[in-house]
Length: 155
Image 1 (cartoon, rainbow, N blue to C red):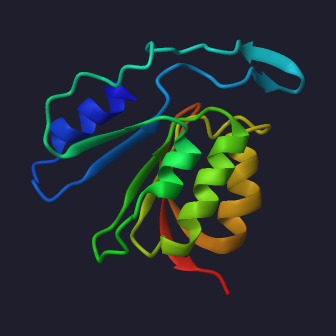
Image 2: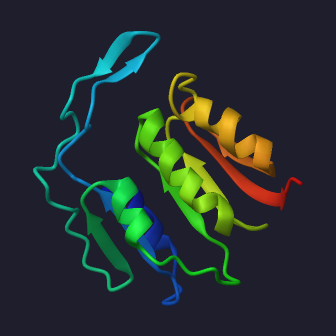
């Protein structure tokens, strides 16, 4: 999360940007698996509970369970587009967080999934939750990631 946050904040000049990062910073809460094969073990990617040391007043770290922290945050339903990075790797927390965001997503909002290729996790959430609810435009992809922009809400 620190690399992406640092990159975007260095490239976003606006002081109106609000950056909220949600993570335990203690690593994966469960084993990350694909097709019943372990990809990473429980606790992988741990930062020992410490958020990245990024000195920027636009950043607010919500340290703790991402799903619970997001639920406790009053997110603005503003006219400004939202840019949401999903870097949870696991399907369950990605789904739970996206479910919370569906009511406030609007045309122009951008969603970035860093593990969009993973058909057992993030890709499954995209197929089952995002695409049935929104028409989206592909902004770009890599071998693993996907960025889309919400064009409209489906009825």
